[in-house]
Each structure stands twice: as C-alpha cells, then as structure tokens.
Image (cartoon, one colour):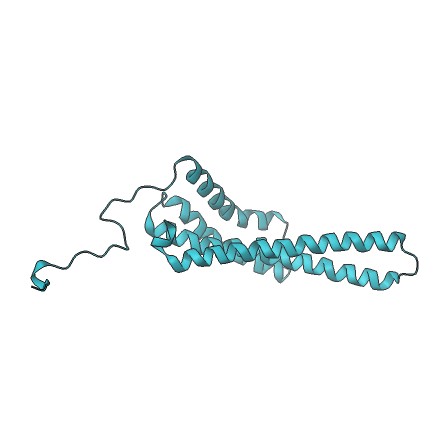
Length: 171
C-alpha cells in the first residue's frame, strides 16, 4: 500500500530502519564486549590491565557513538521517509505525520547539540526535543493497530492517471 504512494521513500524507510537496528546492535555488542573484558580483568592472570582498560574505553566510545547515531538520528530519517508518504497520501489523519515532520528536525538538532556538547544525550532538553518523534511513532502504531489505513476515494489515488479525452483517442 505504501509502495504505491512513494516507492523510493518506502524503500528509504526500510533501509533506514535496518541501519538503525544495526547501529543499536553494534552498541549492544560493544557493551557485552566491555562486560567480557571486565571479567577477564578480574579473573585472568597475566593480562595487561592497561590494555584491557584502553580497549574497554574504546568499546564504550563505540557504544556512545552508535547510540547517538542509531536512536538519535535515524528516527528522524525514518520519519522524513514515512511521514511524507503518509502526509501526501492521507492514509492516516494529517496530524499524525505532521508530528513526525515537526519532530524530525528537532531530533536532528538535539543530536547535533549532544554531539557538540551543548547538552547530554540523556537530558531533559533532549527528552523534550525527542517527544514529537516519540508521539509520532506511538500514534502511528496505535492508529494502524486500531483503525488501519484510511480507504482513499477512487479519484484520489495519485498513481492513477486520468484517461485521455476522447478527442485525442486514436481511431
């Protein structure tokens, strides 16, 4: 259904969701690797504690970056891809994709500010700036679960081209 209204954006949404999950997975693996290194540091004789601490610090940095870019930036990309389709096609009430289209730039601004040290990624300001995206994702999910897509009228399908006037028809 969505592919009919914006194939490129639908594919972009799937790709950005996949990238978001991949980034989160990298962060989780980094945390698990730090746990393993802490276990090795505590119980293994003959290991160099300095190198293990350096490696653990590097893995924590990977986790920090992956969580800044994964859940920090990718939901904005997701919203821009899917919300534009939903807004133009009117398959859901317009207020729902509007939340996503408002929240996407706010989330990018918040993530950029966190990147440059204006505030922490987990702070009250970052929470306020992420609320529209959270509301967008939650409301879209609830609406789709409860009501599903609106049924477009037969004349409002943007992919259907009107027939040529009979004057131009070939005999």
